[in-house]
Amino acid sequence: MAFLWPLIVLAFAYAICRFLFMLIPPNVPSIDVDASDVLDDGNQTQENSFIYIPPRGRTQQADRKVQCYEPATMKYLGYYPALTPVEVNERVAQARKAQKIWAKSSFKQRRQFLRILLNYIVKHQQLICETSSRDTGKTMVDASLGEIMTTCEKITWLLSEGERWLKPEYRSSGRSMFYKKSKVEFHPLGVIGAIVSWNYPFHNIFNPMLAAVFSGNSIVIKVSEHASWSGCFYFQIIQSALAAVGAPENLVEVITGFAETGEALVSSVDKMIFVGSPGVGKMIMRNASETLTPVTLELGGKDAFIVCEDVDVDHVAHIAVRAALQSSGQNCAGAERFYVHRDIYSSFVSKVAKIVKSVSAGPPLAGKYDMGAICLQEHSEKLEILVNDALDKGAKIVVRGSFGYISEGAVDQFFPPTVIENVDHTMKLMQEEAFGPILPIMKFSTDEEAVKLANDSRYGLGCAVFSGSQRRARKIASQIHCGVVAINDFASNYLCQSLPFGGVKDSGFGRFAGVEGLRACCLVKSVVEDRWWPFIKTKIPKPIQYPVAENSFEFQESLVECLYGLDIWDRLRALVNVIKFFTGQHSPATGKKND
Image 1 (cartoon, rainbow, N blue to C red):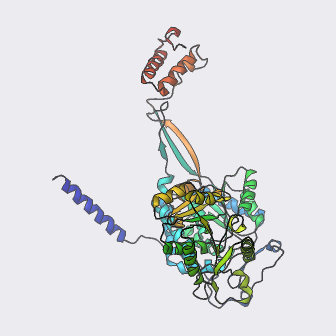
Image 2 (tube, helix red, strand yellow):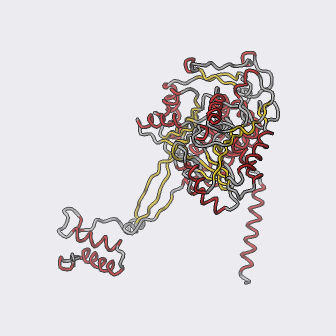
Image 3 (cartoon, rainbow, N blue to C red):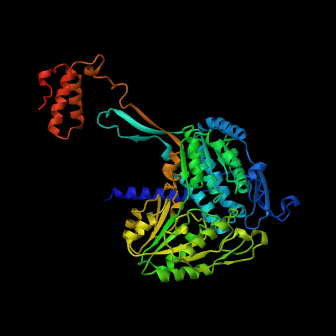
């Protein structure tokens, strides 16, 4: 045992050194980002202080301006140009030049870029969240959960593991190529294009940008016309961090515009990432097919939230309300279908109703509200149509939340959190993506029925399953056709950035995040080379050299049986035959005979 003591002392000393090293602050330079355009200090000019009334019946595209306003107050924020196809192509060309330089950058330089971003984000959380809140109507807490934490998790994961997953990965060479080394290399694709939605304006820009830039690419991001104001400020943060590490200009570009702008981007990049609706996703695919541009699509969701009878009702009810309000028109991937076991149905509905009754909605920066505004114009009308359709078919509203003070011009931007019972799958509310603060709750009797109901959807993004037995919850979840699963929790996958994220069916295909998302930004290259070069080289066996010998097929038969036969004695006999071929001792009489 005496020899163990030095090892224990060394291990303890190593642990102490690691701990002390953690106490040393990293040398990360701070960046200065001009935030004057997004700070609401009450000193705005008259030009930008009026209430904006979006035009109905015509698009802004005719004006070639992307008009921006606060959905919670309708206060005008300004406008950005709608780029033409020619301008988009120019931006992509500039990004392509920058990428050729950046592809040669070291991982050390790329990690420093990430640290600078992380440092800025942590120190400017309020500014980032307020900007997101003003542009999309979400609350500060929702912005922190969905924008800040997810982005910080992605950065820290890349810092910890990113380089490891982009280094060559060695694979087995198999039996016939045992004298070879086989590996997979991951090279930058070139210019990544991204068209992102409005619901997470900060994270939706940073998510594809971080993966693209860390893997050696450039990226051009078209932000949503509903979140261009915040997107252009977040772009300044990226630009400042890139400049601080000496990255080439135009490595990252953020562009504004409408459909025409997006179409031009799809046809000019090396890989396309799209976050949005299934309808637009199909258009992206059609356009990408013209140039055979690979695409990753993250589309709609109609996540199922399954509650078994053996749960803590109070605990799960609070999670259910948070999950539903996360789909309040400011966020995506909220739970939109609630399936509760009939034994606890009444108590669960009652508990949820009590919580929702206490929820208030209002301008998120004007007071303490649990829920903000709906970002999209006229979306509240769609939600009311879905609710009325359910009521006409037998559903019942249990309770609705309350409103705070809302200015007259912004009334249509709010929808009360609503609990609905007695729903079924004949109702549009249980089939179409609502994207609103609605909790439709349906009964089920058996686990098999719950699985059947959850799978009865054209969407397949995620699900959550709650049970007092984790084994039971896992069994139910394993049968649900979707890409993301949370057991006894909801949306925790978003904060596990080592995991891939994406769906199936009308929820899209391809994956963000994790190893899969990072390598999706790469040209995956298979490489084979001699293991013991130059001592052992590939030499074509004489029987199959041109012109092939008369007994060439017999040689191949023996070689295949030697390598892959299941009977060891047959393989040994075949090996003897192969040796005879190589030594010139083989004759047809000693070859393999047919039975």
